Length: 179
Figure 1 (tube, rainbow, N blue to C red):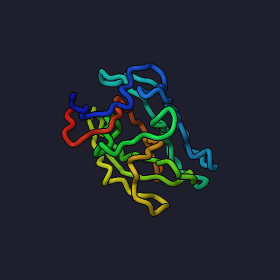
Figure 2: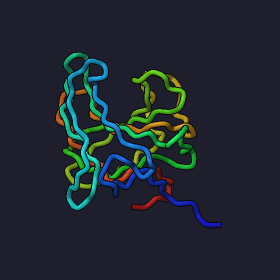
Figure 3: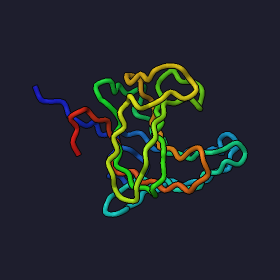
Figure 4: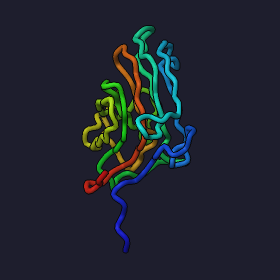
C-alpha cells in the first residue's frame, strides 16, 4: 500500500488567475461589507522568482472597520476533512507585518466567527507552519473540528496598516512534512 503524502496541496499558484489547485476560487473581502472603508486588491504576481497571489491594501479602523482578506473555499462542495493532518502550511512573502489565518467550519452562521492564528510574513519567501492546536475560537466556544473545514482566509486585521502579502503555496501538513 503506498504511503499517504505528507502534504495535501490546496493551492500552488501555478494558474495566473484566482482559481486554486482545488478548483475553487480565491475571493477578496474587505470590511466594506459592514460599512468599513479599508481598501484592497488581489492580483496574480511574480515575486522573487515565484508565482503568487498577492493581497495589497490599506486597513482602516474608520467606520468600525479593520480588515482586508483573501479567502478560499476548501472544497468544491461541502467540507474538507483535515483530521489526518496537523496544521496549515503556507509559503508567504510579506512586508514584515503580522497577519492572520482564519478557518471556518461547517455550521458557522455568523460572518465574524472563525478560528484564528497569527503569523509574521517577512520580506523574503518563508514557509510557515501553523498547527491546528494554535487556532483559537473567535466569538464562539466550540473547539476546532478539523473534519469539517469550509474556508480559509489570509487576513490583515485589527490595526491601521498597509498590507502586502504574497502566497505561493497553501497546504495541509502531517508531522513528517518536509519542504
